[in-house]
Image (cartoon, rainbow, N blue to C red; front, side, top):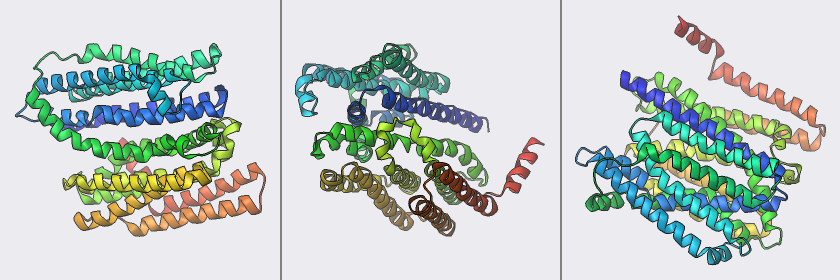
Length: 482
């Protein structure tokens, strides 16, 4: 029992720190769109951060997962596993950073930044530091030190925000260079604070252990690269595929409006930390298929609720970004649906993880990558960022369906399709009514938000009458207090 309580506490700390960190990081979006000089500047930020996300997966090459795998095996010395992973990742990260600095001009030319090689050297060297830091952070989790882990993760975000405010607002340096400089400084300070907690003190560097870890971890690299490219390929390829001179400005508008929809991701993640204990508490066995089915049902129900809230109050949410970006807000509902499909797909991944058939995850990611690539190459030259967001939507919708149907054959889980279907039809119906009224009947913003509030009330009424009755929640709360 004490172990379960400790696990629950640690999970809460990791989860809350992640949510708080994402929310604080989200504050950078209005800073950049309001304080940077042009949407094209934010387009540069969007593009280079997409590259760094991909590089981070490549530079860690699955070693974080490999560390947890071998450090917890009785036939391996945990100290040697950590020291081996630590110095291996340190060596490859330093080598990558040196190569980037030496070849910054050819790399900058390749990425279409011939006049700003410093952007490439700063951010790619920084991602090398982040890649190395993944192992020390994994070690903190292995040692069960959630407070240190959470504190250092939040330190990075707070420092990054503080430096951005200093440079962009206080000093008036409205240039992309200072966005990247802020990240460099914040990452450097975080890493210096991290090292005293995580320097290897026992074990030895073991070549045979390294071979075993690489044999286990490198296949995960394929899965990781395919997965992250499904999420970032749109922002990486856009400057190459969009044939007009305003490519960076269009990418900036797309990137900013995409971030508006990230409200969905933050809210659903926060809700999952709240509802999962409630769902699993209903079942004695956390691995029971009924608990996974309930988790999926409630995830979808509340994802729809959040989506309706964002759409119906988009006239307020739009102020997250500057008015020069508002032309792209029409993509927000598409991105919201993408996040929902992505969340369902990740929830469906239970089946191949429980059956140790993780190869299916790799296949789904590769299929999704192929769909994304083809749709973007065909569509972006003609319809711009609509093809970018549309390709993500189609990608996750297809692999979500594939995972469901194959999973039901391999390891059936009794999802409540009737309930899910009822809420899907209700959501589509409410959205249809809203858009019909907005585009054909009502032009006043405040009236439309009033109508949206009524429609949201309809959804909440059905929710509290059918699947989340308030009386049951109140009775449970009263009994727990007793």
